[in-house]
Amino acid sequence: MSGVDLRALRYFAAVAEERHFGRAAGRLHMTQPPLSRAIRQLEDELGVVLFERTPKGVALTAAGSVLYDEAGALLRRAGRIRSRVADAAGAVTLAVGTLADAAEHVGDRLVPAFRARHPQVNVTVHESDLGDPTAGLRAGLVDVAMTRTPFDSTGIGTRVLRSVPVGVVLRDDDPLARRTSLSSADLAGRRWVRLPEGTDPVWTAYWTGGGHDAAAGPVLRTVQECVQAVLWNGTSALAPVDQPLPAGLVAVPLSDRPPSDLVVAWPGTARSPLVRSFVQVAESGRAP
Amino acid sequence: MSGVDLRALRYFAAVAEERHFGRAAGRLHMTQPPLSRAIRQLEDELGVVLFERTPKGVALTAAGSVLYDEAGALLRRAGRIRSRVADAAGAVTLAVGTLADAAEHVGDRLVPAFRARHPQVNVTVHESDLGDPTAGLRAGLVDVAMTRTPFDSTGIGTRVLRSVPVGVVLRDDDPLARRTSLSSADLAGRRWVRLPEGTDPVWTAYWTGGGHDAAAGPVLRTVQECVQAVLWNGTSALAPVDQPLPAGLVAVPLSDRPPSDLVVAWPGTARSPLVRSFVQVAESGRAP
DNA sequence: AGGCCCGATACCCCACGGGTATCGTGTCCG
DNA sequence: CGGACACGATACCCGTGGGGTATCGGGCCT
Figure: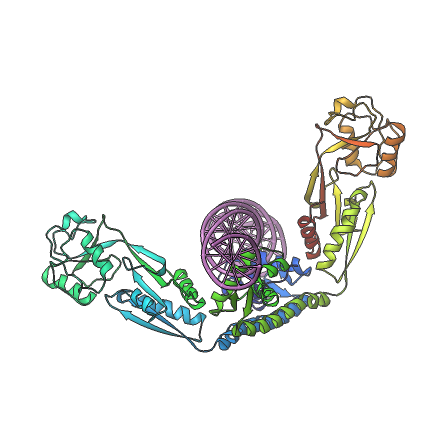
């Protein structure tokens, strides 16, 4: 029963190389006390003193230097496993679909982090501007998608990464622009930009569910166009409040509408390990 | 960041060999659900499907069989570390002192379990009958001791393994033998066997602290002699109630005296890893 | 069609590995 | 010679991960 684990050996190797608990802890991105404890546990486990503690650091004992050689060999071998297995699996591709406004996060954060984990995987990013990227999931065009609520969730699994209030995008000279919060009633009679017919029925429903006249404004193709419309002709638009906006525009949160959730989505069928891994990476790095 | 750990590889190897989650779980002394989860996490970590799940078991995929080879090599190498390090430390000895009534537990349970962990260590057991084995700690004769409260605890560290009420050992034809509990007042005027002068002052103090006349009975050398004395001439003795007794004797718990704690003790100075390991083994197998 | 066998899922709970605060001690300098 | 510092050890707290039990889903085989 009970065997040494690689984590303990990594800790041990760090201390052996630094000859100093504090510095080793820094290199391991942790603090000194749990490192001291881990080394002591390893010593107890092996029944052997590994370090001579001195007032200005530590030194390896004879048993310690033997363990250092063994641990190094084991850790190097363990490090190779990942690529060996990946080679055996052959060349694989992961297609990621994303909404335009999340594309930056996907391209700058998620994909690099994912590539660090799976260097052998060919990741392609497919950006859709206002259309629902989950349509690509159902069509088999992409394996995993980043999108925002609301969207058509039939036949797909999702995980919420972040939840952001929906706000009204206004020019900063708009009478409502100084309010810290608005309700739908405040917006009666306002002209809105709206999305092209059929591009995203669920978001359209969310839109019209607020009592706005969906036909009242111009039809625009992209988020950028919507923002420009607000800026130049006094229409309004809805957007999650964390979107960066050009100077002269503000986003005021809507208190009586559900928030917009940034989600990662995958086909309800056939969750491959790569997709699960991507979801894990997305969840662990959810800080924008 | 993040590497495979040996535990996951051990699980994987077991499933690969059994080709069956349930059987593998049995071999690993665990249940099937956490094993399934661990394998799935390993698959996610590596981004690869390791097993083909079939209705009557599982089969390795191509990537899986590569991992099986790698994992086997890694695990064999890890298994050798312990003995390599132990060899480097040279021949060492651990001297264990014990009270006679714990000797069976020490010899049958603790020492074998400890030898399984540290095959290179020469374990010697030193049995002391009624004398305090912690005296051996202070004298440097033993490295670790098993004893019972009360004992002289100056200058040593201890850990309680088990706490058992102290009882009065009586012949079963004694008028008090049917009671489920006794207090010291019930025992006035009774004749007692007692310990030789000077062998164990602390236990003697515990004894006389109950109001008994320490000089009232015969002086006996061993626990067995005490029991015999109770059996043959109607004296009485104190003993932890979990002691096995010959037919014709019963032990009735004393409600107004502190319990007897079975403890493992070590010198307050110089806690070597071997001693700590012994204490760990003693604690983990504390079931009598 | 129904019962089974086997892996997957859902949920709970404790141990362990992380953190912060503090201590003990040897060393070096003023 | 004494005090401040540096470094490892200890004490304590807390969240997570890896165990458990109960249950589901879904192919085979009678």
